[in-house]
Amino acid sequence: MFTTRGTTAVIPPKRHRRVKLDCNPAVYKQRNIIERMFCRFKDWRRVAMRFDRNIKTFMATIAIAATVILIVMSPDPSLQ
Image (cartoon, rainbow, N blue to C red; front, top):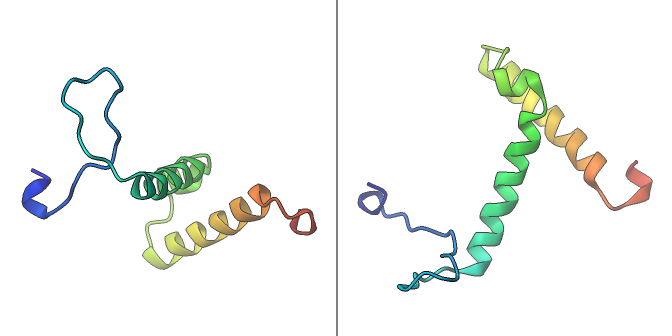
């Protein structure tokens, strides 16, 4: 299904697998960062349940959530 769209798997195979599939660690790291951000968005109930049916309001809510997550997760103490 995914190969017809030109995508490749970036999840590394298990260590005990006999046939090792190639995995690019840099791409996997980027994918992991995106997945963690979506997980943090799900902590925001309004974003997870998509209460805002208007796309402009929904995107504004995502922008606010991303900004707050950035400030809270920032290692820079001047932002907190």
